[in-house]
Length: 328
Image 1 (cartoon, rainbow, N blue to C red):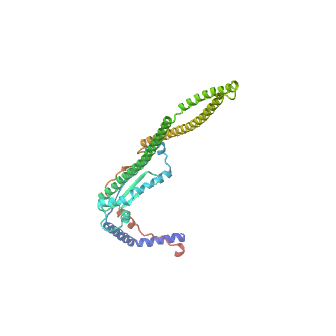
Image 2 (image 1 turned 90 degrees about the vertical axis):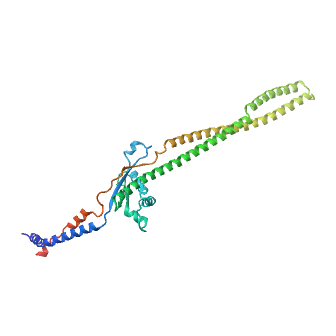
Image 3 (image 1 turned 30 degrees about the vertical axis):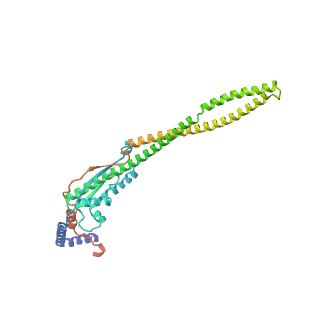
């Protein structure tokens, strides 16, 4: 038999000789653990669970292949359930504050909100001495969290719809003003009548030019008709030049207003289409929260954990066998 085996046997002999001490120690430990566990005030933990569904307007194929980044972004909903304002309302509703304990410490001892990794489940844990109150608190926080998310989504939809309606109204007003300006320009400064006048003047100018040419050939230079034809032709040409300038100005203005009206019509049409899209998508942009597990009234306390405490106390002390060199 080796020296190590001899040392092990001697250690077992010593442990066997002290079994009564070990038994008494374990018994005392178990008794103390049991007594302390029974004396400590019991606390019960109730759990309510909320599922976070993707937006209703999203592609259903996307909801089956959400990314870890998207799941991590959903952890922001923990702030909805763990907000100080919501917890303060719950404290006032259930009368949970009986001393001057700060609200943050009170929340830390009563409320725990977490999302299990890689899930869309929001768990709300409420711990209180009264199991019914604990369940009521967890369910109240869950219900108010769902309502808060709906209110935030509704407010976002209203702001988006309000902005779309404002843009559509501005586009309609812009189009109406431009159409009024176009109609007034067409009525006040008509182009067709001025063009007709210019066409008549052109025919008259051709006749005067012919008369001037014939009079210069047929009549002597001293004849007054020659000079009269020339003055009429010059006056007509000055009038035609003024009318041509006016026609160019009117045409440019009408063209500009027509271009602006076309652009305003396109903008108004796009704004109306966007407004209709926004109205059709109301309530389907943000994630939807719904309670899938309201929880039950806990039947066993979560603290103190009697089986765990007794089990730890019952664990016998560990004896490590001495080394062979010590027993050699």
